Length: 499
Ligand code: MN
Image 1 (cartoon, rainbow, N blue to C red):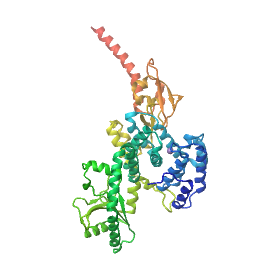
Image 2: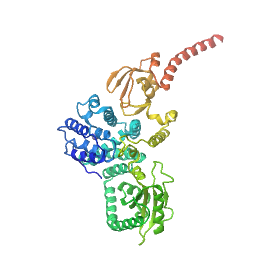
Image 3: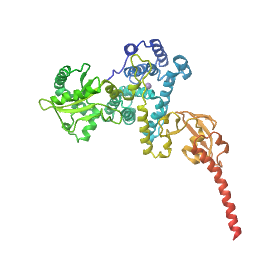
Image 4: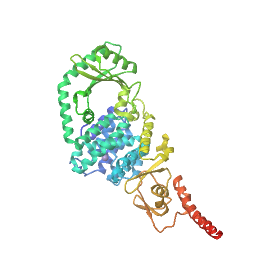
């Protein structure tokens, strides 16, 4: 759990410790810019606003993300809160930092729009849209975590909305991205506000258990360390981990409140150097203690869908105590804690983030689920992995997300909403400014189509800038339709003449 607030100095210390020869000059410059942008502003908690972006940047540095992401974290609210423009950010901090800040700002705008019941769906889609740069999602998580930590300053209705959003939208996305550490914090942070009584109850259970079993578990840990040091294994760590409160709450519900069925309230983690040592450690444990039947899980040979790998086993120890073990390599451990973010982490010696495409497949999978749920199956072709690269996601004024191909125009948008909206379309407002109908749309734009019910149909010229097959077909159709209608009249007339 992080501290609520961090000073800039603490951030700088952490950066110096984490990164090799980091560009402290730029970090400090970002801080100065942010401080000027937020000068004199105070959060509802009573703290100066600058404490928030510093805390967010600190978290991003803790996650070990590349320094540009940390710098963007300090700057993430400046466009919103000051006269600062994207161009100026670009000049001062380069295109990468500027585009990160811009994407986070856009994501925030979409949140202000109320689509009520479709809200969760929209947000998920928006995340996916922005996933063309997954670092933006990490920044959004860091931002949300700090807002949750300081939620006590907000009025009650806002506490509830933010907590619900975090639990229903952010946490599942973190989970699907394999970021269990972040997911757990998001869940517990929201749980406290959504079900305060249950939260307290779970907290009491854990407090009692930790007091009861803490000393015992420490002894077991010592014992294992001794066992392991007698083998050829050299690099290993053994530590206890306490179950998270929301996770306990869910499990208790599953077992009808029977606490005795939950064996992993406190588990012991063994981290070793390679896969072979994982199995060696497992063998060692089983030689020593009898495993509980049916509780040995080999997630190394068969990883969980989100990529999680570890060996799990539950054993009876000396005095009939039941203890769960999780055995993994350091790499598996990092992946389990940070998920896809692990691939974006700064690695000593390499100045480029290590990329891996597994998370993209993962996102494509979520996208697939969303689509089958919402009957978007007609869009099967966008199931390609590069789906996010050439799609844009724009909003109706009500907050609904419409996804379109890159280069799409308001005409495509209008027909995506409804054929009649397309046919009667006369003008468009983009981000509250009147624009031409051939204007290119960009992700995050809020588009309002102005219709004229007296309009007879689409302008054939629209074919020049309609990009989607759907819009083009409808425009053709509407023109065709009149011909067909006229044709039909002629044919009918002939029939009559025959008689
Ligand atoms: Mn923020």
